[in-house]
Length: 398
Image (cartoon, rainbow, N blue to C red; front, side, top):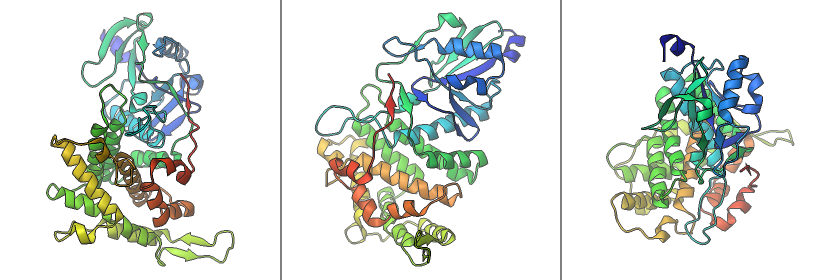
């Protein structure tokens, strides 16, 4: 590649495993369907090159993907610098997390081997191309051996592996995604932001659909995610992990306290929250240090009892102990992995609220209330859809 070509090259990134109905912005990154290219690509020659490369992407059955998803840093398609690469990675992490956590593809630990859900983290793999003025291109993807260069566009063919099905993203946690984009844009409280995204990366990896990726590995990754998020000390991790989750009962008392809950005379909105008081109360609880004299038998509530059991499971797996399938579920038969996701999501919403990025409304705070939340967290799988009122409306396209 000549120096002149290097200066003139353009870069485009595709995410062939997902399909979007409309553009989504996360921080400085735009995700958009190829059909919306006219809104994002002003150079007609570049638009033709992008369309030509997109036609080379196929499903595992050999069908053209068609309206492929494009990930775009700043709409100018210039070569990425380190900040651009980091921005793309974190934006993808956020989008994958909010889409996968509520509708993951999985096989239940017990019972039928029929898979549930739609998304795996593999759906969000990014594929980047450098486009040269000569019409040739290069390709990059993966963590290690990942680059091909000097190809004609027509020489490049890509097929999704059979375990990645193209899925249309129709419903996701848009409110959380907006909050994550906000902290990315403002880089508020940088250490907290780094910890948030590192914990989401661990969870996303737990949703890989690659071959031989077992449920025990997912449990370890979920535990690692919570450890990263909770910023635990290096010593006494089981005790500190248990105490951190145990404090959820204190967080719920804050939400239900008279200082936070206000009665209105307006009949349509009988209650409201004093959000500054809520923030003050949450900060006080999250700021508590790990106790040396914590006793599992006398100090654990429902949350702490689960956390202790979950961390012991994680340790047994990590240290190579024999772990039966029955141990992968909590005492009432709900999978530990699912409860861990609920715990992370709970803590994540609070952290984003404390960073002034997430806006709690009245309904959300009530849903987080103790009785309803415990019923969901520790319900048996058969009761989960009834409790949450969830409908699976996200589409698998191919």
